[in-house]
Image (cartoon, rainbow, N blue to C red; front, side):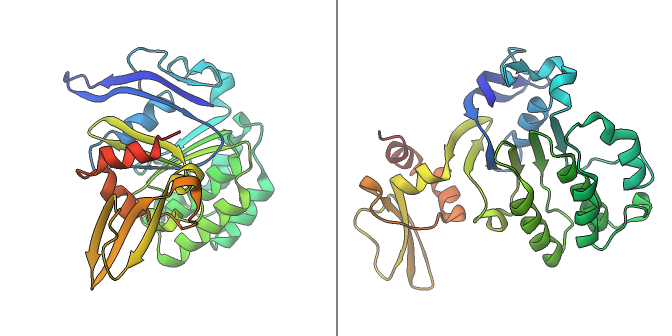
Length: 279
């Protein structure tokens, strides 16, 4: 369990990047979304113990402050950022030098995943294209099987086929006791996979909620005329895409992630949150 308790963060320049964030994030795959500069990467760095929140114990994983970088916690935690470079020449060398610190590492899973990406693990990473380097890194971190996996823009550089394969690999290999948080602007790739949605805007947490609860309280519909009870709507090509109340969870609809995000950063935010937070 990741616990954020009145978490804030200020850059050395004095500017506040995150302000009073409170959330409990349990096992499952959670999508972290927000505009550029909203604080997503900073929050992931705090969760990984790479930055220290205010107060220092505001971010806890399994009751251990991430800022302390306790070895027992670090062997169950990994972050892969968009700019991260691996320090060893090949993935197999990385495995020999680094994977020993992760008790749950699976050599079989690594080999299978690399094979699905058309690799052996012996290729020199530094000579890879951006996309192939990302595939090798993703294969490795999935095989580490940490209890908490933080992925910042994992699809950057991947072609359409590799994106689809990575989504399949995630769906097949993330266990029920793992907590995976993915920060991404390409939300549609994860629409059928996520268990929770986390929204940050302007350094503030707007929402952290399981997708089943969202679908239970609001519905997403496409109609030729605007619904009279629409919380938020957009018109395109003569059709209205709308978010409407779903009292009692009577309607079963898929979550339109783009429509939902547009709504929650619009003037309709308070009305939308009011419906989501109804008991």
